[in-house]
Length: 606
Ligand SMILES: [Ca+2]
Ligand SMILES: [Ca+2]
Image 1 (cartoon, rainbow, N blue to C red):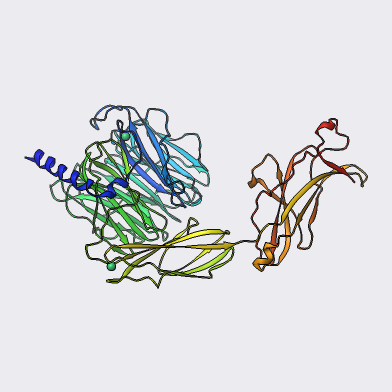
Image 2 (image 1 turned 30 degrees about the vertical axis):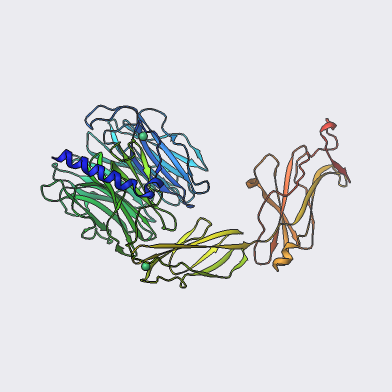
């Protein structure tokens, strides 16, 4: 009996998962155990914070042929500093998020760490953008006039936005882009009259690719794509085949730094429900002949992630809503490492994958619908723990590195050398670095420029040929010019000219710490802001030579509260940090004829 077989397998897996302590390290991202949480998508920012979106359904989901129910799009962030997941944020707040195809939200992050989330509201695709932690107003990208599904978003470093989605009844794939801050018109990508669905979109330096599943009859689907340039008004190419593989579907796409698109898709094997996972890359004219990167079984919904030329692919194995496990396969340094199975991921349907900036962790998210050992309807994240264990008997590698120079003034280029690392019974196949300032890299010997002064914890993770890892960290102190001491200012009413005016006199003292660093201070730069403004509002108003400790600011208004700060400069173009000084006075400046002498504060008459 099939039912008994699955029950027995479930009991076995339950015992297996709970006997492995790494399962307890998984994080519940959605934390809504009674609401069905569907379709998680994930992105990583420059310092490695994890960002996830999904939808929670308030109406029970029973079939994709049911009428729309109610739900909302949610967002949650894992903060690398506090090492905690934030509370889920209801990002749609409309109760209108619900698609029968249950892929309701997409996410992307640009190089300035702005976060772009798209979600479905019945017929609409809506965008919200978060800058510095503040969410902007919802923006309607399109209203299709019929139910839509699978909104996706990709952004480039300049903040150009490419979105895609499909209209369910019409079976049409659409895209809309914002170039240089201006939205283009909605574009139709797939042909009319051929059923198309499940698009994904990616953007590179000079090109964008969209890929989708195009039909045909039920068995006649193919993986198709279109591409375009990134100038305003550029047109999408007509729909083309990724490959001739029949009964293909659910393609996903990423673009690397060389503008090479990488596509994965599933295709059924003969008349069976089994499928294989295929991979193709853009050759410049077309896609390469597909390589098979999975075993043959009942499986769905591959996601691909690219970083530094390496590829990370995750997918679901099992029936829809009753996944046996999340599987993954990674292409590191040009070779596929082989399938892995994520323990404790039973119940998954939709999955996604990213890595940490240094690629020492592979983050996986999945939804489950209560079919798993946890018994909740939630989105889970493995927190980088894939449960990979080196084979018994493999001795772990030893991580060791040196760096030169060991300290110096920012900006400081440091060369790191991991050739002192070793593996007692094999070889090291991977050196991954986390520079502690939000940057990361790969390679045995690598250089990195620390732009700012500070103390950084640099981590090296080495991986041996059988997958065992070791990590070593070292602190590096990057020095910086020190600002002058005792920056003070006072307001004067200057009566020495033909007319009375208000001036400010700024004074400071030399900082002996710069002598200790061996730097010659060649000048000082004076900054001013309104006292009510943030430190970032300081603007430079003048420079003096290194043997001068006084500056007169004649461009101040009367009765306004200002703050000043002073930085030290050297003849290499370095500057000490702009910081609020220990006790900058901010006395209101007043003309001598001011009507309200109670507000005078301190001022001096020349
Ligand atoms: Ca839930
Ligand atoms: Ca070893």
